[in-house]
Length: 435
Image 1 (cartoon, helix red, strand yellow):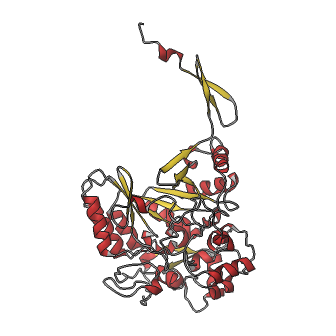
Image 2 (cartoon, helix red, strand yellow):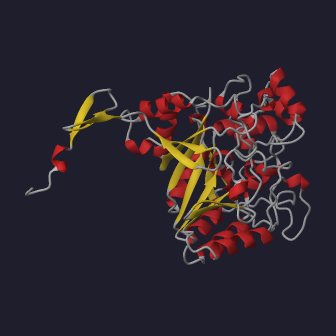
Image 3 (cartoon, helix red, strand yellow):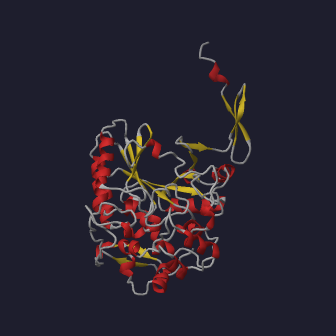
């Protein structure tokens, strides 16, 4: 989607939300130790220092068409975006012309990954084209209900490598810390669809967080902690700071990373207050989940720029998806756009074999073709690692085209990006000096 014309900036002050015990699916959460951050009304106040995320012309038009009672300041408030997310058939069919397949898939839903899309991200969905990339990644279809014997609820065996609830310890020196089961928008190919959302079995709490933090404290080989979920940036500022400060106090933890799609689906969350918190606990690294060039809007680009300005090295993680981003030119356009906003393409993932994912999964050969079409044809910083997260908990395994062609007595034979062969000399390595 191209954005043309005037881009409006709206000044909003980010209200300090009530703390809450869990941010799984807001409508089903009882108020408890922390309270519910999304259902309580939050006043939207203007403040001149908070002019941050723009409102692009398509967003302005979408706001007028589907939320006519809302102000531009409300649209720019991340709490408003979550409270007004699209989560039902009645809501989504007002905005797009559903196919019979899409309508049936939404009507049949009773468990598993729910429908939830922020108003901002819904504004990027094509009303008329069911093959559009963002629409396919967000709107359920009946293929989700078709499963094969190779597909599993937990293909990566995360639950088998979880020493305490909410922690996955797969690699010796780093852990995955699952902070919440809530996302502001649910990708239909989510590798944790078994556990997130209102029907998921993951329920975070302060007690569980403290247990996870204690495990990290008591395991000195852990030097790297990745906060994920769900999406950790959907947590209120108070909870996010609690987690960051608690982990930063652990002397043997050198690196803290955050895995998120918030800058893409909820860029309004990148507030001045949150940026101040993140800067306080640098060095932090952030991996952002991008899918398609259509996501590179003025809003998302502004969010990434502000995160980079706050000192966070940014990387992108993209899942290779059939008919969505499995063309070299699509990925090249995405990666070139990311480079412009200081996001380094990091991983291109083969789609995990979760239940009902066959319509999203490409062949492994397709993934190798994507890397071969990028390597040598664009800058090295724009070429990610193509990896398969091995089913059964084997971890990430990188795959490359076959550039190594063999060895002769004179050296190694290599193939370059144009298909030409070259020899790297090694014969002298077999003879020690003076021998």
